[in-house]
Length: 414
DNA sequence: TCTGGGGTCCTAGGACCC
DNA sequence: TCTGGGGTCCTAGGACCC
Image (cartoon, rainbow, N blue to C red):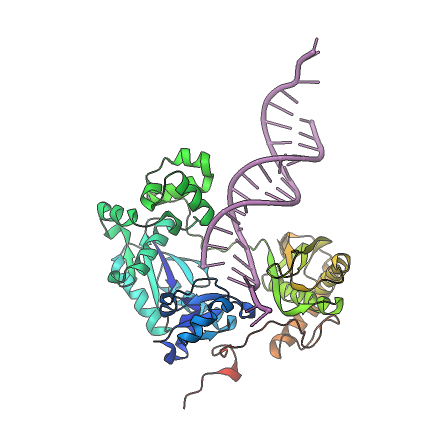
């Protein structure tokens, strides 16, 4: 049996753990730069606030209904996520962490409904977060069961498909639009609708071979999964990342090379830190800079692919490469709004031949820098390209405290 | 005025090999 | 006049997920 456990309105629920007065009011959490709405409480959903809506378009609803607005607080959410995942790991035979707020579990033979309720109870009691649990024989069906649990309060947050007889199951999924399925986005949904497939039930009973011809291998697999035939196993061992991205929109536009180099250097430092943390090396990067496509007359994006001679995690080498690349693509007289670095061709350090002596020296240097940065703060030592406080830094006006990861910001009890 | 960030997989087409 | 078959690798673009 596979269970899909997911936290309801995850970011909003995290904020509520530390501020109980938010429980009864509409709350939203914003994306970086306070740009879009990316998490909503149920009350906020009822007001018609949509996922991904830009804040400025929802401003009047916000004021009218006194919606509480939070900037995103990723250190807090990441820490809460770790707590949830650790606890879930203890309640299952095997576990695949699928996203920051979602997890697949492999369950031993048991009373599934009872176990689902136990999961829900433990996470709420020990961590303070509400979850829903969907259970079935395949991942696709477990996701669907979770959807049913969310949408129908009478199930009390826990649905197990194998406890519902087939006729009732089919009645249920005849009412669910195919667009709600895991793996069906807006474009596939539109194409499916065009050939007369509107409900999950219709897709379940479609001919898999024929659908493969029309839509590719994943559609065939999805149909098998809907019929209880497993195509996607639980993957408890996380495979190595294939790319690492660090990109940001700026708090204010950049129109000079110095500020841009500052931003790029900072993004590169963060990307390389992620690289080193996973003990990976990179050989290739993409650097891009662009203007604001929403306001500019002409959308502009310049990018360059840069190759290094060998696989490396050496920050200074990669920095030289990045700055050289930036010099090549940077054009004056453009108001830049966003930039980013993508590290590619990642390999495990032990799978690559390296210059042993040079590598050891570099590792010592990098480890020392990492240690100093983590002891004090991440920008205590920077490269010469970086300023103390780049004016491009993102806007975050309503950020809650890092209640669980910073001694200075602990919750105070009076 | 104000519109996020970070990932994965599949497919088609081109270059190249024997 | 007639112009094969089988393969790999790379890349860009499209689709999806949270």
